[in-house]
Image (cartoon, rainbow over all chains, first blue to last red; front, side, top):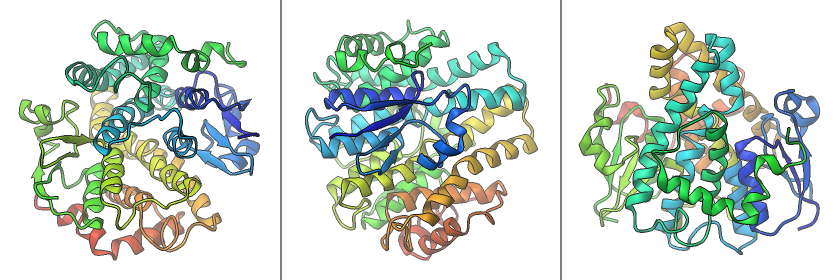
Length: 216
Length: 216
């Protein structure tokens, strides 16, 4: 598909997800950077693209704008079948989506920039308090996730078998936040192993924050 | 499908979603209540069902446990085709999923019981501060959502056309939280209209918090 534009930010975890998905599907895109710390996503110009003023948003060749990283990944998987981001069987698909959502609904929304900023202004949270908050919510999800991934025979090299998919994409993206805020990953050997396996793949590595044109 | 067990709580917004979806699909289920305020979901017994200690979880007849409300809805839609919770065309599916996720990823995770409780213990937030926090995050999503739903020709009686789907389910469920915490819904006439249309349908009404066996 020609003419894809990805509105995103190098460090945004939801942006990392969509970059990995586009890379896995072998799709080229124009990188449109919106500097979140400078509030560029809150401009009138960007609100005309995505009224929610959030990244990522994927602009298709016909001008349609897709928002929400999980919805974008589902779209890419429906339109570009290979390689699949989800397994075939409904129960397996539910398992992969549940892992993805444990990160995308239970962890990431509590640890993204807009929420951390709000904790500072609203409750006077300092760096240590913000860090504690992040560590708490990561642990709440990653503890059970580690147990689940370790104990379930569906787990292989990746979250679900031998091919990377939607769950691995979300796990990979969240790990950069975890690292940046000094989350101790020692209690999560299976998650670390899956992250390392993903990071060795060019589609993932190319999507990492430090490899983007707007990286600082 | 015989033998479905829904682990849930009357007031849990994610539980409301799955109840509506089950009702829309015409599926019977056993209602297993876990009292969140009493911490029943954190028991060893329930952790054996869902290690994440969150509701809802849907136990299938073969003992498989599905977690995460959006993943459960996708599963139900894949296994029980009628009536569909998503439209057919990929772009339309992406739109409906994006609306659902604006609520399920950007709003609800910040306004659920475990987070509000944490704000109280961690930052000493009182009732007024908790209410402000909720109002802020609802507005962040519902403002742009109202604009989007009002301006988009795909919006009809429901978020996407004339049949209720996944977006309406999430919108409906979140409205009970909004009401409970006194969010002023006056600025959102289109959202109110869609909520009212959904609430008139038995599948939705039957799933409302006040109509559950554990309602207080």
